[in-house]
Every structure is written in C-alpha cells, then in structure tokens.
Image (cartoon, rainbow, N blue to C red; front, side):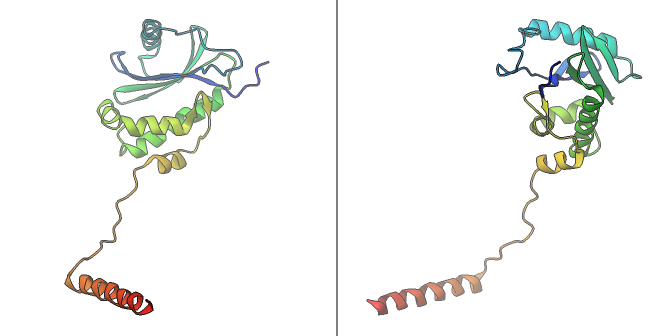
Length: 185
C-alpha cells in the first residue's frame, strides 16, 4: 500500500483540437518510487496527450481510466483541463482539487475560462496551479482562498497629495530639526 502524499502525476490543458496549451508533469526525484519513467520525452508526452484528447474530446464525462492512469477532466468553452493520477489514487480528492482549481481560475479570469484568457494570464494560471498542487501533492481545495492568494494586489487608493503647503511644512520640520542639532553642538 502506497501511503505517500503524491497523488497528481500531471496537469494538462488542451484546446478543442487537442493541441497543448499548458502541461506540467510531476514526479520529483525525492518520490518514494523514484523518478518517473512514464513520460521521459516530449514526444511521449505529446503522444499521451493526443490519445487522451481522443478519448475525452466529447463533453459528458469527467473521469476515465486511460493507459493505466486515472484522468479527471473538465470542459470549459474551448479548453479541457486534466489532472492525471495513478490508478489507485483517491478520485474524489482529485476531483475536488480540479473543481477548486477551475473555480479559482474562473474567478481570476473574470468568469471566462477560455484559451485566449489562459494564454494572456499564464502567470496567474501557473500561480493558481502552484497554490493548488505542490510538486504533485494537493495542498489546497478552497477556490476562494486560492484565488485570493494569487490575485494581483489592488493599487493603493489613497493618493499622496503633494502641493506647495506640504513641501513648505516638510521644509519647516527639517529646518527646526537642523536648528536643534546645531544648538546641541
């Protein structure tokens, strides 16, 4: 029985033609079973993705067993988002993580999870993924918390008004401090 925390082997986003938009494969050298030998080259990864897309291109499902891997996926306008895991992993937990990731991305991309938005905001997508999955380990499943940690900070709404009066006030303060220091010498 494998009691490790490692549950996600890959995160993939494909468009409706089966082309890769984003892919991130996990299996660090520190994994209890060693480094992954399943997709060692880009060619292997692309072949896996093409076969996966062929099985999941029609909307309607959300989980399949493909090539001895558990594949959970969600369709969104012109994208399909996948979490790939081992066949013995907890599919409910992975489904929850995928749902929270897509919900967080939907919040961050203003309710429009589409190819153009993902490519234009790739930094937010990758940060959101990193807040959800850390090196193959699910770390958070709260979409609101993920989105709040990833979202760009709002610009400070309090403006500093610099006018002649504030400059004169600063000058007077500096002048008084200098006079005090000179008086102490």
